[in-house]
Image: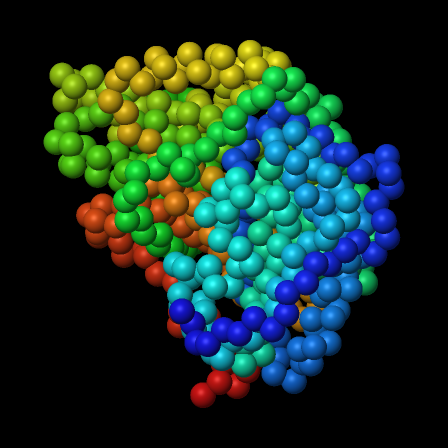
Length: 447
């Protein structure tokens, strides 16, 4: 817990004008229906100043939120099971709090940001029908934390970032930067299933293990070295120029595999899931216009025979395995995905086949290109952005660093396994506290 946090107000912010009756029933797409009933938790640590009037900032944020909700009207409704959103203008939850601490203290405790979020995103599984909740926390130094929870039933992280940027542009009176998103595109491209289907839920199926999340920072120099190494081990494969994200993903995946081998004292099949954004694969007109769920997880299988102890490709050409897994998301694959329930039948059969062999899993989400560090409410861009990791073992969220020339990896593992990571990876575990404190001192004249 950072300091003493006092909630000073809780209210619902309604759209400034009513939603037209023709738009009151927002249908969920097939991909929406598959998405888990959790909340996307995003936390922005913002610069401000002690001389700013907190009441004035709060009022301005609420007023601009009310205005932007007229364009993003499903976010002010309530979710109706796994079928639709009732756009009844109920409003978005808005919580305001005061924190008797400095912003630098909050940044040092980034492993547990729950106190700055409006809701617990993963305990709210299936219980929360509000699409949007916001918490504004004012620190005594003048800093601000803006915590946003948006339902994954109607939005992916890119859609959440689109909303955040639109809200911030409204705060700055930059109406020309705001687009009107297409909320019906998802249903047109991925029609909802006629029969009831269940959401994909990785969270509730997890064993009750003690999980730990750490932030690993790959700076410009480390990224260059990783890319050079990845290029050398993939020279014989079809990947001639690995991307920085592929190099980091393969590096982390290698350590997951080696750690699993060490624990089980043998090689085992390994399945690495990567989230792929379908917007670019489907040549949609604009990422910002396509609001909803458009990612699909594609698995890269590292299969190995227990009798083959010399299978170097198992750990060497990981970039090749990862690249090949994303290549299957082509037009033919998307057409099958658009079939709805038949796609689920294929997925189920594949899962049953894979389940016949011992298998380890890991999950990668790449958010490096998402526009989160450009969100500016008029009092400065964020000095840190955090998307709270889900409580899933061996899950990784990749994000760009504040400077834009590095990559930070939020890795969640079983606590005792985290301690078993080799020094070459553990040495990267940092929260860059000193650099943040230096920035804050220059802004707030901290002693």
